Image 1 (cartoon, rainbow, N blue to C red):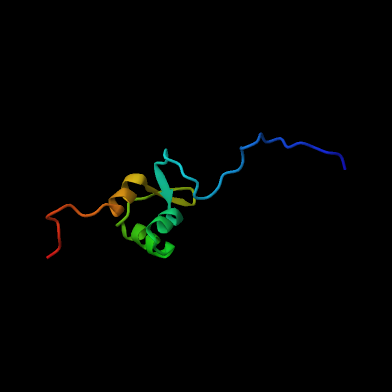
Image 2 (cartoon, rainbow, N blue to C red):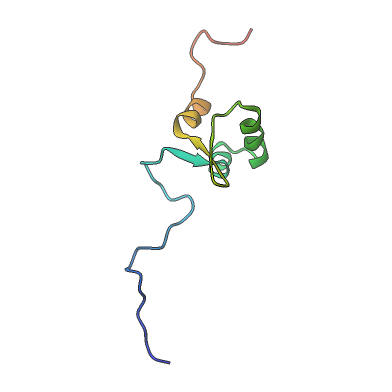
Length: 82
């Protein structure tokens, strides 16, 4: 066989799951589950119940970044359950 170079420039086509991106506006259900330390079925349940805002694009459900931030934020002071 003869030596042949690749058609893809170095660094392209090497996307990795979990790579840090600061320009993201949404996360998949699997990413949200991993970030929160929850089982993926728990997050799907939240989406199905309407407790977690989401958008379906094709076969993928995306959770907006603001909704994830709301889940991770501590409750405001004076908003404690009695």
